[in-house]
Amino acid sequence: MSKKKILSIIAAFYCVVMILMLVLIQHYINRKDKKLHKELYDELLTQIGNEGVKADILYSNETVSYKEVDVPSYQKEDKVQDKYSKFFEEKEERRYEEQYGDLERLFEIDTTKSNNDDPETGWCIRFMRNSEDGFDLCFIFPYAIGIKIGNQCDIDIPESINKSIIFYILNKRSPFYNLIKEGSVEEAFNNIRWSMNDYYHLEIDTLVEIFNAHPLFEKKKQNSKSSPIQFDYVSTDSYRVFIALSMKSYKIKHWDGEPEKSRNRLWIIWSIIITTIFVLSEIVLSKMLDNKEIQKKETPYQKLLRLCNPANFVDEYDRNKVDIANDIYKQLLGLSSDNAEVLEKLQIRAVDDLGIKLIDKKTIDSLKFKISPKHFVNPYNAEKVALANELYSILSKDSLTFQEFLDVKKRSEFLFT
Image 1 (cartoon, one colour):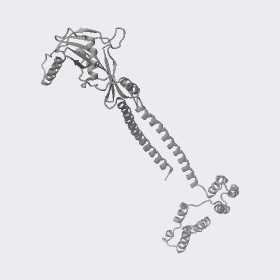
Image 2 (image 1 turned 90 degrees about the vertical axis):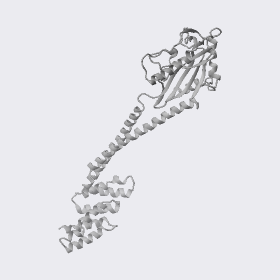
Image 3 (image 1 turned 135 degrees about the vertical axis):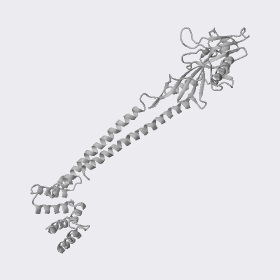
Image 4 (image 1 turned 120 degrees about the vertical axis):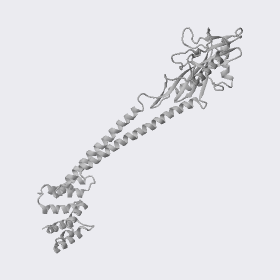
């Protein structure tokens, strides 16, 4: 096979390896991406617990200030509606009636102090809950109290508001029944807020929307699905405390540019490694093929001069062989390459004393093909067939010596005269 063809095969193999490398790295990145996402999400689940919710009381029994506001009333749509729209409108009207229909007065709780933005709503329950691909950090607090018709005389508004937290602590219908533990949310939040790995971290989701939510006091805002929103209410025979929910949603997000950055980095690193290996391999192989080609074109004199260089016998040191190789090498340097008689003697000595192989199977097979008896049957020559048969038999011996090979080569010259 020619050098050009061998190097072309190597180049084609290089292209295949590069394509395979790209595919395998992409597969590795995809698997790692899924693994790291699962690890981070599993950590969230572990911290929040099997119930999916952790809750504690952020504060309670705070001073309450309030002001009176109008009781919301439902405004019907004037335009013609289909049956589905009419169904939802009737449902919404019933909700208004349930929440506000029996109220005579409504008081808004002031949720900020005069000197800063800290809440001052009487009480606040903080809770964490699992969400799709992350968790929500939520706060519920009273934002209004409605006085029912005929019950406005003996009601202590601040006390009523502060007492409403009892429902969420002790009532079995409360979503936080038996879940409120002091400091549990802060501990879990601190454990997971800065959780991260090579590809992912937790980030506040500014685009989160709370579906099917109602704004506080039914006031339509530009984005009525953003927190705080109505959450619940606690009713007694005399009043109704309205509860608001404020929420921050934390989502598992990729670091900027990941995992593409990691994939591209691996592509570059492995492209350099593979390319370097193939380039060096081509250089080494090219040099070996060149040397082999040179050796093919060597004359017997050049071949013997190369093989009898004393340096060839130093690595596996043998003093006697180094001396013999040195003597043969010295004679060769002073010998004309045309002196076949002396060259033959030196060849025989190199084979016998140094163990050098001057013939190989390919050389023997080449000579056997040339002297095969079948070449002298047509036109038939009895003498040449007999000689070719004898020489072919000698070359077919397993223990063929170099001397015998030289004799066969000389005698075979008669076959071509």
